[in-house]
Image (cartoon, rainbow, N blue to C red; front, top):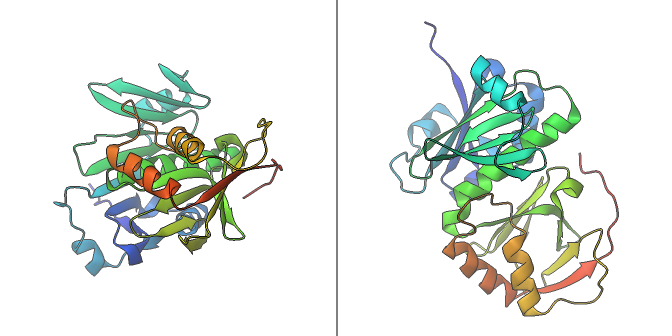
Length: 260
């Protein structure tokens, strides 16, 4: 049997996040590689791959390859249990399993380093690529939750964080690291400063004006990209509390935009 060869990537290499993914070289299409680069995953050399700290408690490695025939049936089948539109979260033999219909299925074994993402072998449509982006954000939010890193659907614009509903974000997300005082979005990064603003863009929000600190805490707590039976982690709660004390937040008028 021919040995499988992989391309390896690390999330935000310069910031030492123990979050990695690998994809089979024969399945690494230019469109997929462009998506990884846009989301902040940097290519690793052979030497860097050998130095991946697999024994580190919070290290997570996502292995991506085309789904088997059995998993193809699960990916293209009906949603089960918890329903989030095209997404579902279920327990299979005690392990959380996340499915994005017609896109992929991912196991989330929280106590293990290696996680697996099986992708639909026929991904051509734009909405399917948006689904891949959403799945990778779900992975990031799970992998970084124990370190208190926050993920929200939205973008960065004019020095402000724009938080919106998932269906309006086209899979684009903002990653906020309160401890490192950094914010990451597609192709951009921003330092957290005393002048940082968070704008809640919600198309059915009938409110205006600023949010109180209690409102900010509540909004940030329920709006994260983390999809989990346990809810947000204690370290995430601490980050939200700290962030709420140092930012201004307000409602913003919703305008339909395309981020692809």
